[in-house]
Structure formats: structure tokens, C-alpha cells
Length: 323
Image 1 (tube, helix red, strand yellow):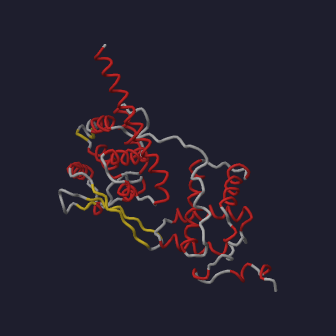
Image 2 (cartoon, rainbow, N blue to C red):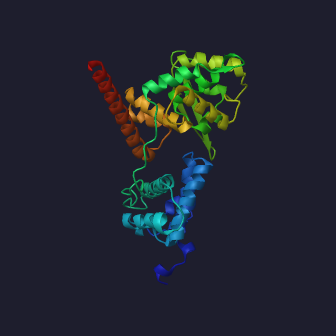
Image 3 (cartoon, rainbow, N blue to C red):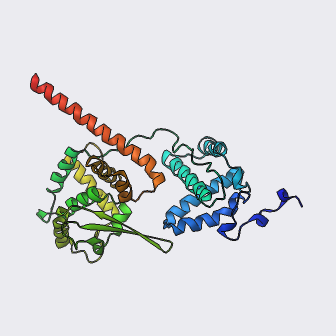
């Protein structure tokens, strides 16, 4: 029988070591899912990545040997997905799907199933996405001042300041903040307190240890005295935490809505301007090296934008004085 006519199941590998250049695309997917799980990816991430690759099957590549994929054929697929499929595709979704392709083919290349990585040269997004907002140093001070003014039962409410400072200094995501436990704060060294951000996915535990400023400990103590949390740090819903951030921003006169995402960018920009190394910021945010390509570039642009605006304000101030 002509090998080219072998049915799909005859070429399906029974173990990851069996994957080779002629392995059909679809036959590799269960092993790729196992790989993602072993890397500690969440169920949400697993579902998103596998759904992205399912689109490649829908594009008619289900039985295509993996060695037949090229950068050009993958770009053709992305063009179909964005313009010809008939389903809206946001910049964020597009970028994630490109990331999925990059992670998938890089994995195949690492197995030596492919001699070259056809996804390496793919463009990360379809067009320049607008930069996110990030707090400038002066806006940070305005927000801290505003957070200190909030009251609960006619006394100072520590929660707005604690939430704001926690996010500014650690850059944790909304879901991560919601899952925080009191035991995640390692205060054994009063001069170098650490927040432990734990993540569990497919029976694989990962954690990030994020140092924060000692001054935040006293705010944490005030917060605990007021709210009496027993295990979880925050006793309200993530939506309520979003409302608190919004209120802080409004009270501080911030020209954009404060959110967990804005605080995450603000944390990264603040660290960058303080001279923290790129790799340390990447690890602090829990980003993969692939994700960092785009994120790092945006942070650089945000920093440059802030410095340019500050220089313009200084010139305006000097002009006013001279006048």
C-alpha cells in the first residue's frame, strides 16, 4: 500500500516520542495538551489554546503532516481567520491565537519532530493596538492621598489604600488577588516581606515570590484589624474590588478608569523606571518569554511617553516662570 494512503489512525503516535515530521496535525494535539498541563497552565488556558488549534483543523489542516506547515501557510490561515471566516476577531484574540501557534510549533521543534519552527516569524498582532494607560509618579501620589481619605463608620478605611498599594507594588491579576490567603504573606523578614502568588493547574503547583515594601505591612495590619479576615485576604467579591479602584481613581482626579489591568501596567512601568531588570519584571508579572515580547515593548513605550510628557510639563512651567 502507498504510504501516502495510510489512514490517519495508522500514523497516530502512541507516545510523545513517536511524533515525527509525517505525524498528522490532529494526532499531536492530545500530547500538546498534556505538555501544557505539565507546564502548570490553567484549565482556562488549556481550553483556549486547544480551541485555537481546533480552528486550524477547521481550516482543513486536520490530516496535514506537521512538516508541511510553513510560515506562509500559517499566515494564510491567520488571514482566513481574521478576514474570511466570517466571525469577528479582536486584536486580543488574534494575538492569543498567534501565541498559541508559536507555543505549539516551538514545542514540536523542541521535540526535534520539526527541523525548523514555521511559527517563529509570525507577526504577533494584526495591527498596532493602542497603549494602555498607566499611572505616572504624580498620579500615584494623588491616588495614595485619595485612598487615605476614605472612611468606614466614620473612621479611616484601610482597604482602599491596602488594595491600591498591593496592586501597585506586586502587579497581581484580579483572579490572583481574589485567591490570596493571609498565609501567602511571608513577613518573617520585616525588612524584606514577600507575597507568595500560588497557582495550581493540572496537579502542577507553581508560585511567584514577589517582594514588596515594608511600609505596606502596617497598612495590611490596619486592614486586618478592621475587616477581620480569617483565611482569604479579601472578604468581598472581585467586582467590589473593582469598584474600590474606580472610586480611588475618581477621588484622585485620574483621567482614566482605574482597574486591575491599569494597576498591573502601572506596576510594570514603575519598576522599569526604578531600574528593575526586564527579566525580573517578567517573572514578577508571571509572563512567558513569548508574551514578554509584546508586553516589554509596550512598557518601554509607556515609559518613554511618561518621560516625554513630564519634560513637556517642565518646559511649560519654565516658560510660565520666565513669562
